[in-house]
Image 1: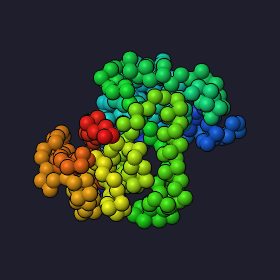
Image 2: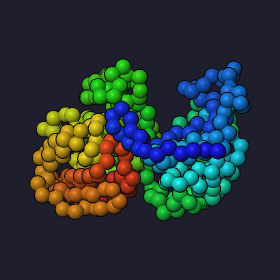
Image 3: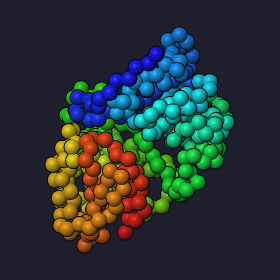
Length: 355
């Protein structure tokens, strides 16, 4: 018989813990060069892997403590049999609002409809390239993977709303390298981004350049609609890209970030910034200072006007005499990426192509 525990959980920085990643297997149908050896990997014995009922019971205990969002991962989660059964169990737990899946996409054409029916809310396809030959080279297995077919299978499933999505956009989520962070990782064990132009040999700016160049080779890229946005350290790096690549970017999006460079060094660009009034890590006062600096440099009015109010976010627009408006979206939470942020940022980006 299971029991439940009530009460809110927070981490050492005071951030509310509401998100859990669930690894359902250590196995994978790829052998990516950067992830695992081609042969000889010792797999966990079956007895050491939680049954679906045990996973659901853990989530059931954590939900009264504020758990709201789940992400199913692996290894490659879709190779574990009857994955939709777990999704149904998790969907039935009171308090769980969002269930996502991270997958390489190989099995989506045969599984997407069942997963959607079971209650999966979102799916992320992790792809190292849009070119099949490159995928085979990196994954060291030829499974006849077709990224487009996998995406279309997700679209056909319907639940995730892809039939109404903007399919003209490409979103890229690069992973940073281990980087020292004075706030949360002084030993540099976790992934992050360079802290200033010129730091770390500009490795991350060079990565941005390489990604964009690769996309331009493989796809038709609208030069007037190239944007950068991120959360926390990723948001700070977006501000660094503003300084380093102002003629490339159309606008900047920041969630819980701060401008750490001198505003006088920047070319005016439209900015949308989401901030929590109770952020214990990137203090709200720091973010307010960022608002003030951006307003001054972009030639924005001191008085704003309502832009949007959706759920926890209340957004204000500060028009600009230089064609570079600022939108601030404030919520009462902490250092999280609040619900509704992506939709709000997407709207702002669509309204602000490069002049």
